[in-house]
Image 1 (cartoon, rainbow, N blue to C red):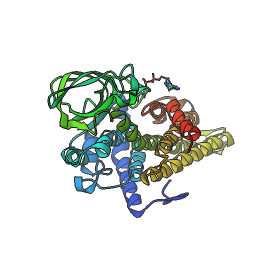
Image 2: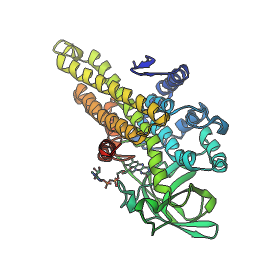
Image 3: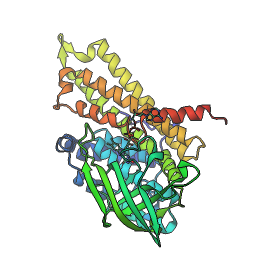
Length: 390
Ligand SMILES: Cc1cc2nc3c(=O)[nH]c(=O)nc-3n(C[C@H](O)[C@H](O)[C@H](O)COP(=O)(O)OP(=O)(O)OC[C@H]3O[C@@H](n4cnc5c(N)ncnc54)[C@H](O)[C@@H]3O)c2cc1C
């Protein structure tokens, strides 16, 4: 399934196909057998982290001069999709490593990139992206964490909520207020990389979640954490712009996670429909079941097609990058929720219990409608692009 090199206008290159197929084999053979256990224990799978590092999967989005594979956004999406087909937590490992690194790639100096990117590309170091606070989710204008300049250091004080991987990361890119009196709320923030071994940095809580249970989601406290000014990415006051630029390149990763989850659920449901017999025949012979499967397939193929196109448009420097990123996350996230819900329906009562993976996939799908901007926020971005003068 999905092995054709052609996706409408998107024709994958030989390199993209080779990499996708290599990650697919890794996912089938090494990730799939671990997925149910990761969900059950809620433990971050360090073994799979080491596997992705050893197989150079973390290296995909990084420049060759920093030890990466120098691959494009579409190649990264193909890898996240294949991992998420079996395990959304493992797919997110790759997506968050990219999410945390993008601020360094888009705003970091060459010296900063040389300092931090090679460790991320090899998978030896992990990174997190800390924008959200308890009272500032969809509206980052409400961020209260402060970074106050003291000589050649910043002193960071405040807290962050819902930060993926922060409890296992070596670095956290923190968005903090450096310019409280800026003329616009969007000029108040700066992006600062904090090493998590600095005094005053604390993980104060880990969330118990509906899905994505192997991926740690942390609450963080910054109690006067001192970092050199040289850890700031970009200029003071550019933090909001850096965060928005980051989302233009990271949201396709969440769309890829959503396409992978949907594809995984579709494959389980289609197989089940050929095996489960009722009324003396396989349920796959029943037209209402066939219709569900056909809609699941059509929706997932449409989301995939949109995702691949979005990746190419963003990589090509489209002036509508924010719209492409929002539109692919919106469509793929909603499709993943619909398809996983229908997969549970196709399996009947068996879909609702943990003997089959579709109930886990349904719980995992929900997060793709929430993080990196809720679906409502994606709609706002698409509408803004549609209604603003060109
Ligand atoms: C598992 C998990 C992992 C996460 N990982 C990270 C991470 O790594 N880094 C990070 O910084 N954050 C992370 N987040 C935070 C996530 O991005 C936020 O939860 C999300 O942006 C929504 O913010 P909120 O939860 O405060 O909801 P709110 O902003 O309070 O929204 C509540 C509801 O109001 C709606 N709403 C809000 N504003 C508008 C509007 N203007 N128009 C219409 N509707 C609106 C929302 O769509 C939503 O339905 C993570 C969250 C979770 C659950």
